[in-house]
Image (cartoon, rainbow, N blue to C red):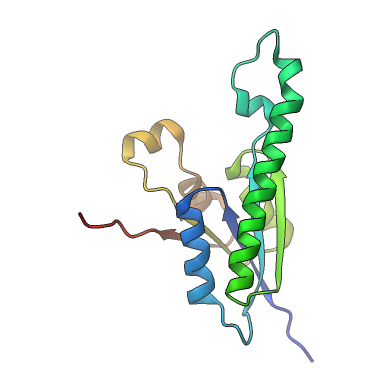
Length: 158
């Protein structure tokens, strides 16, 4: 009788921190022979209106172009993630692009997939920037209903 694998959700964006975190996760938590998790890589695609910011009279004309660009970015991010997984011989992976704020998208993905773990990178913003922008990793650490692992890219020494 085969035991069903637990699900790991990985939050992916187009930052070097995210690619580092994916590589670290695949190197340290997966083996080519057998993966302990079913991996779900999730990219939160902003809505066109959110990406533009403030609404204006010409907003309706611009939205389709912005939406098309955001879809291309999401496809590129997930394709690069697919390449990283293939290079590490991790094949039990699902890739998703979900529209919305990353905080909500990731916590909802944890619930939808009944994930045992959420992994995401840390951008390393300072306290002031984190207070102004908000931290996705901080939000997820407090709101996701599973273990949350935040992978920090080591700082390079000068």
